Image 1: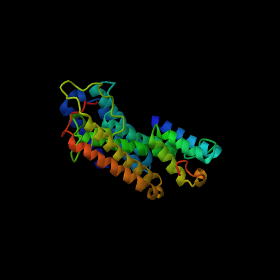
Image 2: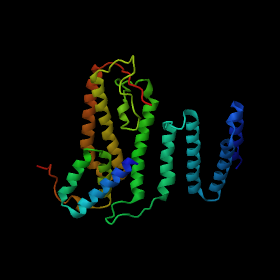
Image 3: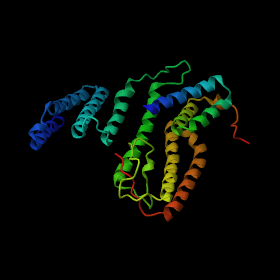
Image 4: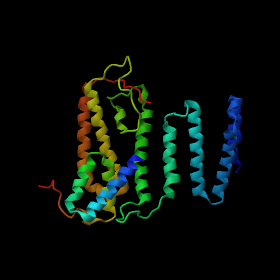
Length: 236
Length: 65
């Protein structure tokens, strides 16, 4: 109980040390909410407490992002992660597990779980590209050459033209990037099938491994002759 | 959210084809779905295979010689 209470005053003091303006109603209510949520878990409402905790974290994150970048701020990685948490701990438990159509095809909860699977894979790709330094120009070649195209989508709009001063990229590294993305795509599909129905893997693995190996090997031939790095136009 | 809607549509279409159309219909749906998003049709097929709809593909693939 004491441990759950400690971060509240600490955060309050830290915020106040930075600026007196930083102290507001949100700052005061956040530790109270954290304390109440902690109490809920001890009283046996763990599922509800987790859902509400995610909701509180989401409100705080959106508020912080809006305060920093304006109301039209783009969702950053943290907010993307929170969206996934909302979809998992708030939306999923609310969805019915019974079919909602006469043919028994649509079970909202199982459908949503698979959507979460895809979202998680996309988030992993997003985080990987961020960690690799997407905005600093990704090395498209070399041993760690994992390109931005690994993340299939949702990386935000890119400028139509490369920034001034950035050399127009040669074609071969782009070919290499596409092939590498597809090598990873085969692995992604294998992961999806493994999660949903692992019994199919025995039949799927031989062609998928073969296709991934061919794509990866072909990628290496292009990568070996291309330049060491190319700068990509910054996205986000 | 867009993927969820598309995935639901694919699940429904595969099921409808399974119920009302011949075995080849599923291959047609798979081919058409593959032109847009492979995730949805992959998950649909894997899920239906798990739920024991073995009659889904009672006919051989048209790709088989």
